[in-house]
Length: 214
Image (cartoon, rainbow, N blue to C red; front, top):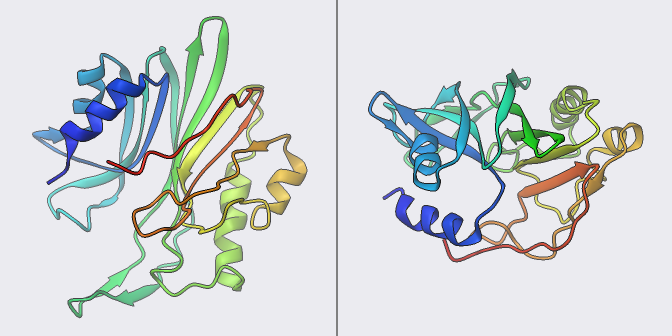
């Protein structure tokens, strides 16, 4: 059960300006991003060429940006894939699948805000320690691709890094870019991990909350 009606209900009640989604599924007759955007009356951009779904094998996975405001300058980039392997619970061998970021410009009145939705590899699930050379190589590639010059920037994603702040892992990015970060004070996943992170530039944080009920 995808729980789409519950997700749409929460989004309708929250009435957000911008929504970023990761691991969104799409196939010929089913498009999760389109369903959510249509229900809210929003625009959306979805890039479906990230990877085959490991949940429903007939679907493709991707990142989506859904917006109350007009979207333009759509772009997508892959992150480096180290192609590490792990064994699933059923005994099958899985190889790390492709990840990347989706990017758009949202025109908010007279202000252009660059929006990024991204997804990093599941380091813990594949037994990759964040202090390892392999993880540092992946994070360095992500750092290089997130050097963006826009005055107003919003980056939201599933970083798969269980920490209240990303600064210790993305020191170079924060050192070279003028960025603010939304520091977490509670889990963002049902299993109690702080995987989902937000950083931004040229915007002001008024409040934050995690909605655990969906």
